[in-house]
Image (tube, rainbow, N blue to C red; front, side):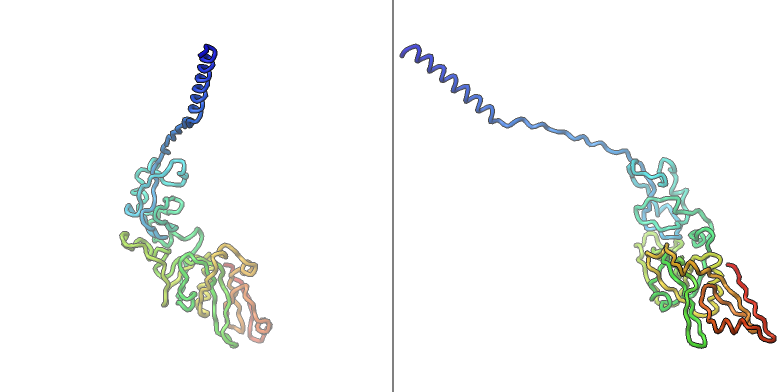
Length: 296
């Protein structure tokens, strides 16, 4: 074989080997980069939470609260932290809950009041009064009214033309029904803390409803209780903070009318029969008419 052919054959073999090498190397998968994620634990603290349901008006105890781990970034200023109040379970013992706490809910001092008196006075708003009236299931939305509901108070009286009903108080808050001051059942810390949380119940007999009223409304209700039968009309939850035009015009004042020598109490804002008014306002011999408005 000629030298030129041998050289050509060697060049071809080298070129083929190099091509095969390049093809084999190019088909290999590229090495994958491994990404390592470093988990950094967020700093935590401990806050005081309700260990069991705490009803409105119930006094806190060491058994009803506990410390709970909480992310520092989620701690609100009103929370009770172990760093700010390490002896909180002891320091807050006996404080009265003005609102209900559910298990796991952070304890906030804004929802507590430190009082040595009864639990009902602790949950009353400033300047308000608690007035109780006797009611039955028939006159209280079938017994489905529970504490914290808002109601209208309706007075039913007997007249010459039959029974007449009118609203004397609108949108007032129910503080208690019987011994219940909140959704958790009997109030005042009288229940067994180890017992399961009771569910709201209705009443089917006569009981006492305690309403949160202003001083003027309290006088109106007390005066009306001697005039006829009182009923509670349950309001929708969306109307709790609303006042209609008719309600805004009702001052809930008591008017004392002396008709023919007899004194009669009338609630301001109610419609008065024109015929009766004209007759009563006409001076008669030996009689005096002296309408008097008593501010509430």
